[in-house]
Length: 102
Image (cartoon, rainbow, N blue to C red; front, side, top):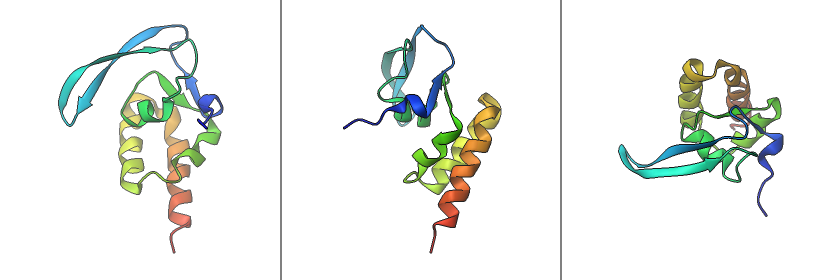
């Protein structure tokens, strides 16, 4: 069953269709059209790969439970420049991750 990402993400460019590069490492393999009339079914994957048209709801910190600590630190670094409102949510996710370490 797919996760309902509507409770975790919001669309920053509603009712638009945008193109996002498909990458393999540093190589761009083409572009994917993303329909933003609603939160995409692959919102988490888009978000962690740098898709700029999605932002987090405060509850989203729980989504990053299985995401790596280094990945979270990198996202925090990226979002400080591109969308600072997400930084506290990502920092909370990092704190939760650190608190669960044995």
